[in-house]
Amino acid sequence: MSHHPPVPLGTFPTPVEPAPRLAAALGLGPDDLWVKRDDLTGPGGGGNKIRKLEWTVGAALAEGADTLVTTGAPQSNHARLTAAAGARLGLDVVLVLRGSPGVSRSGNLALDGLFGARLAWAGEVDQAGLDRAAAEVGARLRADGARPALIPFGGSSVLGARGYARCGTELREQLPGLRTAVVALGSGGTMAGLVAALGGGSVLGVDVGALADPAAAVAEFAAPLTTEEVDAGRLRVRRDQVGAGYAALTDAVSRALRLAARTEGLVLDPTYTGRALAGLHAAVRDGDVRPGERTVFVHTGGLPGLFGHPAAVAFAEEGARTFGD
Ligand SMILES: *Cc1c(COP(=O)(O)O)cnc(C)c1O
Figure (cartoon, rainbow, N blue to C red):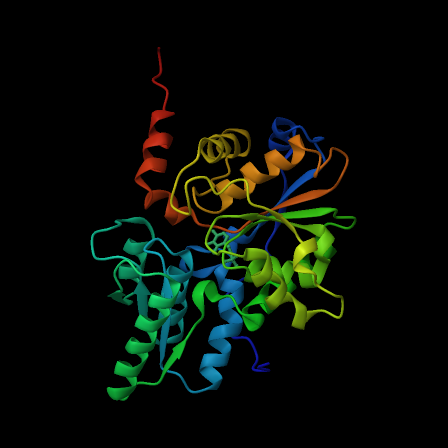
């Protein structure tokens, strides 16, 4: 494992805030629920990927890289924050994205452009195809005399997960007696770091449908960071919020977006944090999370993705009420 120091990018610790109106709406006690504001990590619009990039980009810098290459979906928050980190550190960035130009608009893509990243569209490929396209981009950059470093999908690796172990340490100090941290589970590094710091029994991951076996990824990234045994089969992972797939907007997520907005003025996104809140709601209903237990909802960011998701924007606008009706 790499022992390069992290490069400071974010502002930590992020705040925790009480959410009494949301708690009551979910069926929890008014003092039970807190929100960890990891949407406020700092540069590039904020979000969970900053904590992981501090480590993965730190390693890239230590290796002498001058260019960051990473992969993702068109509305990848990780790709957007890699672009922002590169801009801040004076590094070139190439984003290898699934699909073709025009498949997706606005949202994260607008910010990728603003940060000056170059885009390489890989077509409709699976993760292996995306990784091959990234390797080809790396080879071309090296042939041109650049020194590229590949940042893993979602920024998730054992190294990237270290950033989330730090978030877990912050939570232990900010919320003594914490019973459950609820977080969206995409590429796995975020939940893995929290599991390493808080223990597997204290973290509820809500799968968004990005991986075939998300629990295995979490266990792989978490195990080297803790002396405790991490058993993939015993992790608390909910897979009931995926719906028709990663990019789909489910009714439960639509309701969750509206609920957070109208109880706490809190904006969630349709892919990650909306699913995490829908998963928390389901967990309260089936008794996995109970009133009287101290619970934290880890807000991992993703706001630009709301504006890159036409169905979510349409749903949000439908909710506008005309004064006088
Ligand atoms: C990437 C992402 C997640 C999931 O984090 P992973 O470490 O990939 O599991 C959660 N929320 C948002 C907003 C994200 O962009």
